[in-house]
Length: 186
Image (tube, rainbow, N blue to C red; front, side, top):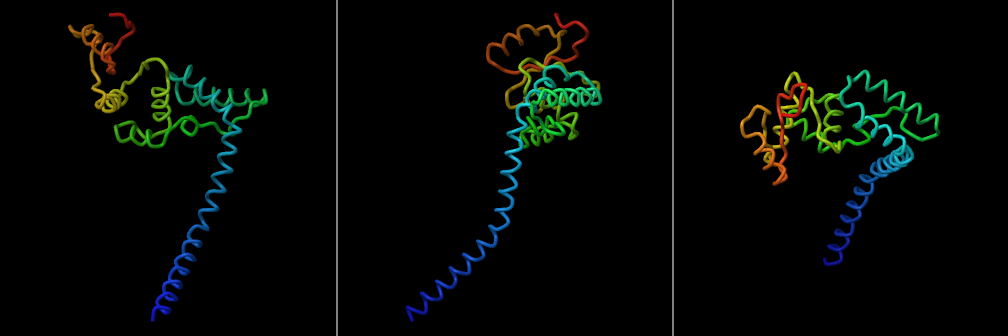
């Protein structure tokens, strides 16, 4: 009786092991493809980061068509200098973090490539962003995104603007200044 129980247990373990091996068979293919993709990304990293840096530093204020033209030109220039880079550059693929981008969309950022590029520029830039935002989409997105950090929203015309700015600087809170015209010095 004890022996039959052990044989039965061994048979069940063998069946589970075969099922597990069959299930993991597809994973090998996926992992092999991931390794190939990562290897290609590693080779293209230098050129992609050069183009991404230029895009963030210089192209934030331009239209999608102008950005794309400049990126294509910069990519071909890098390739002519034998700097490896992706065949088709994508800022989202290079610097985008899928979880962060998904959260941005949840917070109200439109889910199109231009808006996501703008979000990456705002996120990765070392200086404060100036958003030209006639529809108010960026304004709403920044307000929702800044709620956990207690974002302060102000205008230059507010009587307590400087006091609020000092408080933000002192305590490290973000500040959104709305309705900036041609002149930024109050």
